[in-house]
Image (spheres, rainbow, N blue to C red):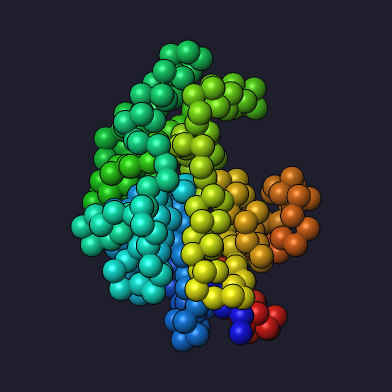
Length: 274
């Protein structure tokens, strides 16, 4: 029997980009719970943001934080964490990414090297983070509790500058991803690497695992490349390069929880994955 596992981005995918609401995805989430389909949250958000949301959604699957920097295993979950995972408060933490202090230092070096106006989360107050994200103040404080990823804004934004940034990061063994609101500086591993490792744990338990992946922006492309059924939410044609690269990619017209609900229900009910 096929065992589906869903890997999903949050902002602009399971959550509305502006309001962060998820109510429109409730029918598909309820079906996942009824059929015991794991829903793995994969985000640039921090563990401090994601764990309360996971609990609010009623999910017990592991979740992947900060663009693949960490994988967290709830105690009540079904998947055993690997031996290298360490118990950290109420979660088992499997660290994959670069330490945050190193990333902050590296971003400041890159800023000075390239003479760019860059503001990272480490430069921002909770009030500024709230203004730039639309988050409530308490959630902005949780967003600032970084472990593996430094979000930043770039004022001189053009293709040449973005390439110079990328090269400067690669020279330091790091990489830059582009999300819905921010650039992100993080280690060499990304969402796709974390998805691949977690998929291997699921396949060790079930011989026939089929993976679904949902995202809406370029930092989700590594995730989409590692799943059996990739879905890109939002206006078709925004990212022709990934559409060409992944012929199996399904394009959903609606972004956010509405598109998420349509995609998951389509796979779980009409396409016969389970």
